[in-house]
Length: 158
Image (cartoon, rainbow, N blue to C red; front, side, top):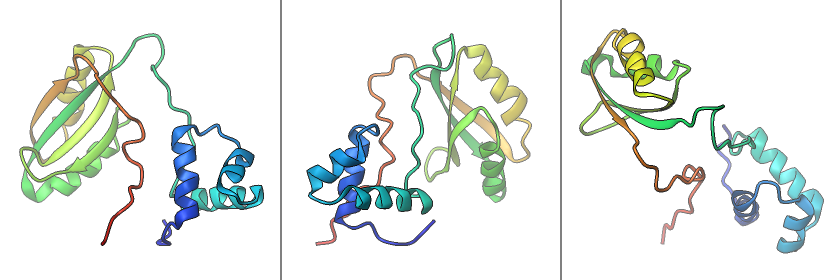
């Protein structure tokens, strides 16, 4: 990933894309008072530098509506990094982070049943060397999920 800083134009373009990624380069250019080619080149550079990736966001995964499940993974401390790497390689897992606090690793997945969650924990997670225990939380009712939560936030250094 490039270490280049985002300037005001990059951030303004990102604001438009966060609101609606289908917005045209022409609309962005007109709103910002710049030429369309500048918007196109900036978006291309943001993609090449792995700052943004434009992908579809689905509301369901096939016929069954999935539920989010959180996995709090307790590990042997010396193996936490290796365990986190192994968990991140699992196809069913969509988010993995090492943490300070109750768990050594926090992971997220989407499952269509409690049985699917049990299989993931019993057959896959518990078979990873260094995993001591897994606490699970199955989301019962999703009140808010903003897929933009991972966006780059402006830092105020005043």
